[in-house]
Amino acid sequence: MPSYVITGASRGIGVSFLLPASALLNDTHIEPIYAQREFVNQLSKDPQNVVFGIVRSTQSSTTLLELQKSRPNVHVLQADITDVPSLKAAAAEVAKVTGGSLDYLINNAAQVFNERFKLTISAYSDEKVLEDDLIDAFRINVVGVVHTTNAFLPLLRQGTAKKVITLSTPISIPEVTLVTDFAANAPYCVSKAALNQVVTKYAVAHRDEGFTFLNISPGVVNTFERPPTPEELEFFQDAFPKFRKASPDWNGNPITPERSVELMLSVIDKVTVKDTGAFLSHWGNQKWL
Image: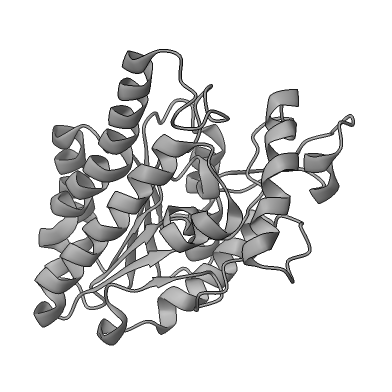
């Protein structure tokens, strides 16, 4: 029975608040359409899989808890990726269910935006705020993933798949940033660039043990949990044409979480230890959109 741990299982790719694709670029009234937590949802459809969703708060993860009620192979665990004791406690809970092993770890949890996401790195008026934003993004997106991986590594060593998948973004790649002229949301992009190297370090350290460490981009995915604010709409109106510079054939429409996770799981299934350390898109190559 393959076992999976997914962090950030109730947010981001883990949760979808679907909007019409055109809604991101048009200031119109939007009716929300809820969907299941996608990594947990799709993986747990196979009753042979044992799926653990790691969330910061089980109380606020009501839809995930409802899914757990209907699928006995779903386990919702509370832990914060910046809190090592909670991660170790979650790993101990996983071990109780699996007999001490784990096949797949999917590092999905991340800080993507804060209220200053539109600023460039030189546009901050307060140096302390800039420093805090950079350090906070690094603490969550880099150190948090390291703590998570280390907490579950002993279980992964006893697993059969030995796959650690970390979600990243192509706007962390210098060449893509230069092509797109995408200067905003610097703390997120800088922290993800560091995370890419973290994954590479794990890859070379554990290749001989048969591990596959992979960075994967989910694509541009519509994961809004609410209608976007005017500031967010303005951001996307500016960002999407920039993204097309790197992918001229992109139609400009975000994909749904369902489609993104479906594609990523196909890639995850196919990669082997020979791919360890790679950074792939949801298409399984460097076609990012």
